[in-house]
Amino acid sequence: MGIGEYKQLKDADGDWLAEMEDTVCDSVHCTVSDNASNIVNGWLCVDGHECVAHTLALIVKAFLEQPRVKKVFAKLRGMTGHFNHSVIGVKLLYEILKRNGLAESKPPQDNDTRSGWGGAFKQAKWYHQNKVAVKMYDIEHPTKTANAVPNLDGSVYKDHQLTNDEWEFLRESLYILNHPTILVDLLQGTHYPTASLVLPLIGKLAHIADEATSLKYEGKPVTVVLPDVVDARKKLLKGVTDRYFTDLMDCKVEDFSVATILDPRYKSFKFKCANKWMRGNLTREKAVAWTRKAYDSDWKPKPKPVESTDSNPAQKKVKHNVVTVASYLADSDDEEFDTVASEGEVEKDELSIYLSLPDVPLDTDLLKWWKSQEVELPSLARMARQFLGVPATTAGVERAFSKVTFMHSDLRKRLSVKVA
Image (cartoon, rainbow, N blue to C red):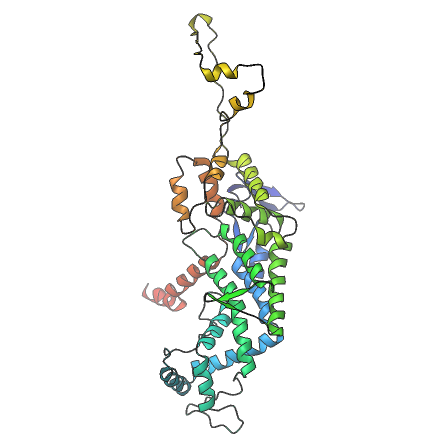
């Protein structure tokens, strides 16, 4: 949302209303909602973006709600609860891990992650990496049967063991969940701009979710063939395409596209993956046109006023043109040199100069790069600072609030009051 100023207006009942009058453009300091109902309801009158991380959580939920997927991951949570609450159970697990040359560890709980649904992926990854030890635990401590003897602390493993088919199901599910997990981690960064990454990364996720795409996991080719995993993969693709390429408002697509063009690493990006499912065509040419429209209307320097000429003829200096070969040939009635003479005389604006530059390496520090261009491209640098300043997620802000809560907890508040 643009930097603006408030005006006081009255509604039909005579009550005062606050209205934001935008004085720059719609994309300056855009608000980002985490999709929570209280935030969304409170921001109905405010133009902004939804949090990409929270939206992806809703998309991945469709994958995890597939009946077979849901059953397998429920078992993972049961085993995780056992190993995190049973002192005897985790001790026996550590012994088996050590015998098999694996690091002593236990499966992470759902809250041991930076995103709400990411715990499912981290659990799946842990069980996949320690499959041999967990299956050996099942054999050596068969507490699945009804007459099984509980551990000394009263904990039992119950019926959470995975069958061989479910282990394969878990492996293939892991191949799919790996990609949205990487995407969320990249978009939750707080030390670099993230708005320009949204369309490239979401486009790649849609490409990965397409069953026709070959997959890799940890650099090795993998396949997904189990029908239930294939079905869950289709649900993931539908969720991505519906929320980002079908239902996303045109103004938000435009903002994300402009941010991508203003990223010197991606200004030649073709938007091929996004265009495949986008409602309407999204091409680089269209993204550049949106960037041009925003630049010309809000950021392009205004032309300087023409200086008045001296009205006194006596003080005018007579200018003698020097005849050169180029000027002589240009001053001709034939059509051979007319176009050549005019080329190169057209002055490029900052956006044209920027677009003519080659793309920078992907490991370039974006903020430092634009800082170095402030002398040559001052107006465009200000524009880039505004569009790239929009965060893709609210995760950084939420973590900051969480840290403040730990620093100034209710107990500390009470203690400070007593001391005072």
